[in-house]
Amino acid sequence: MRGSSASFCKTVLCVILISEYSTAVFEKHWLPDLEWQTASNWADGHIPEIDSHVIFPEQTRHAVGIAAASDLRLSEIDLPRQGLLALARNGQLQLSDSRANAKISRWSKKGNLFWADPANWNGTSIAAPHLERVPCRQDDVVLPSVNRTLSILLPVREIEVKSIRLSNEQQPFTEWEWEDFQDRREFSRGRFTVKYADPHLATHDCSSCFCQGDSQSDYLEEICAIQRPRCGFTGCEYPLTVEGHCCLYCGGRVYTREKLALMTVQIVADEALEGYAGKVAWHTRRAWDGGVEILIKEKDDYSGITIQEAVENLREMLQRSGIDVMIAETAGAAMKDSRLAVTLGPFFGAALAVIALLLSAFLYFGYSLENVLSGCMEAVSSVRDGIRADKQKHGFARFENVPEGNVQIVNNPGMSGREADGNTEITQVAGGRFENPLYRSKRSKEEHKILDIDAPLSLTILKGKIDDRLQDEEMDTEE
Ligand SMILES: *[C@@H]1O[C@H](CO)[C@@H](O)[C@H](O)[C@H]1NC(C)=O
Ligand SMILES: *[C@@H]1O[C@H](CO)[C@@H](O)[C@H](O)[C@H]1NC(C)=O
Image (cartoon, rainbow, N blue to C red; front, side):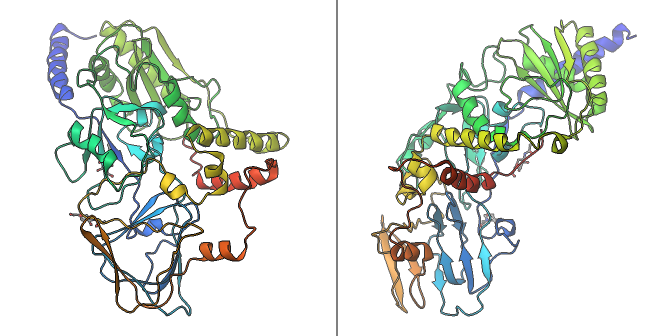
């Protein structure tokens, strides 16, 4: 039992906490690192040595930041069919003649980096549904610092955020500065779908403001097309369906229909769950009907018992604070993954279902069939919304891998320069021809077309192509 002096203390504590929370920042950081100098970006975990032979995957589809390192000398580079290399201004890339026993280094990342991919952002607890792990209208977005390379495929649907800044800056871009990026040369042309929200809507505590827009359905579908293939095994007996979450949810939920301020509920939740902080994560969110719900998830695999306790604790605490709890539920008992024994039969069916799903996902993102399946040559310029914001420190060099193009750097011991907007980008080339095996094989095998779009599409060909894509996805089984 609590005396009245104890509850008075609580009230004081609440007031102090509220004032602290209201100045809290809700930041989401863009995580992907595309730097040459990052060892984990290379398949063998080592940055290429001098005179290495560097190989990019055919479908790199993002920009790679070649460091401002002064002595970057390689023997050969296999360029991607689709992708970008961002050279530092006045940076040098030298090609040497020493081909013999050149060490091979492979770039390990493949595929587009989607704004709508929850794995590319941090700043929310693992209990949050996928929709709220990518930036919401109320969030401040933090992009990598100015000397790093940024490559993002913006969402198809227009979305809003509160502000955007670079991690080396204190101040966010003004709305005008941000809008201005879409006209810059470094950005591929396309729809510039990330906007600044109306400052009145971009507060965390308006009771009818959702993470994105009023109807989240298209944007959620865009997120889930990326996320769903990673759902993995559902380790609980009665999984919950959570708004904005792409997988079934093994955890707990406490919901009140009262349209309270999020902060009020969050403070009670933080207090009720304090003792579980080592084992569970929680997330307070505005439900789509205006109520407030607290989601609870175990940091390790779902066990059921801890969640049951935490939910019960929270329900009591809320009720004691005068909040009417409508739902307090958990996902039941834990389940062991015994699928190997059971699912041998439907295995092939499942594989096909994933293929169809991915294909429709990529088509949904606005790629034509050619882009998805044939790795069409022009796609470098059609990687529509890839953006780079490191405006000052890097020049911009683009090797386009087109069949008619003259992708050759001739034997020239001196310098070959290129004028661009008054900034001179120098590519120094020592030694022989620019090797481009993709380009070569295209020439020698006239017939070698990845996929003839005009011909009827065969499922086996389709499957082969999509399998390649499937391997790109990191099978993340956190759910
Ligand atoms: C998110 O990532 C950034 C950069 O990697 C880091 O500085 C920041 O502390 C992280 N934030 C959270 C909440 O983990
Ligand atoms: C970017 O600059 C920071 C400090 O200004 C430095 O610590 C960091 O190594 C630089 N990163 C790259 C990729 O050049």
